[in-house]
Length: 181
Ligand SMILES: CC(C)(COP(=O)(O)OP(=O)(O)OC[C@H]1O[C@@H](n2cnc3c(N)ncnc32)[C@H](O)[C@@H]1OP(=O)(O)O)[C@@H](O)C(=O)NCCC(=O)NCCS
Image (cartoon, rainbow, N blue to C red; front, side, top):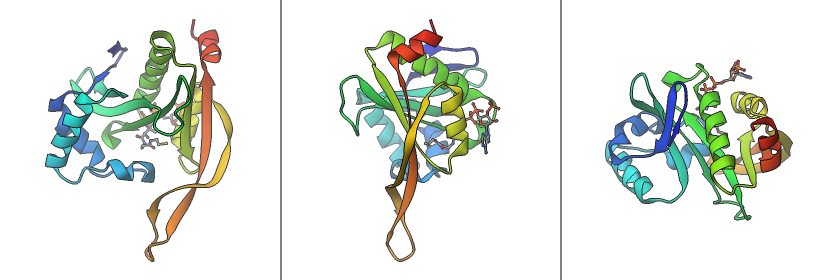
């Protein structure tokens, strides 16, 4: 658990399903389409899975309302390199624009580098996701390049994949600890 000024980051609990359904019923960006929860029943099932999972996926709790307003995670699903994790985040649209994800991410990344053996943290974000790019840069993550037509999350009306351009950002343990002693 990580306690911050306005937020608490903690593992998910089974009872969080309604809060999670609230923001995952209609994911705002294509990259979370596969996480979409069609029904409250699906949300209950997903939360049961999350409680058992060993992945680092923290609920972001707004202290003033004791409500889960989003999530932030670090996973090794794609690369499987040693001590390397990929960062992902999402916030309920009703709570965006208050600086909450910056606060959450700063606390989360600090936790990862100081409390685990993480060596490299990377993040992918599509070229149109200007808010995420701004946040990643504000957090001190380096832009490592643009991959053209890197992923396809959805199809067009004829069933053909729509490819998207993806930026990769990263920060190394030494780089982070130099700035956040
Ligand atoms: C990305 C997301 C998590 C940001 O959460 P948030 O709590 O609203 O973010 P914050 O309020 O901490 O910071 C937003 C920053 O983006 C800036 N911003 C807003 N719109 C912007 C734009 N169009 N271009 C550039 N910067 C922008 C804000 O000014 C703010 O920066 P500042 O604090 O330096 O002024 C949230 O928008 C979200 O959940 N989006 C949908 C899911 C998503 O895109 N996930 C990432 C997939 S790669």
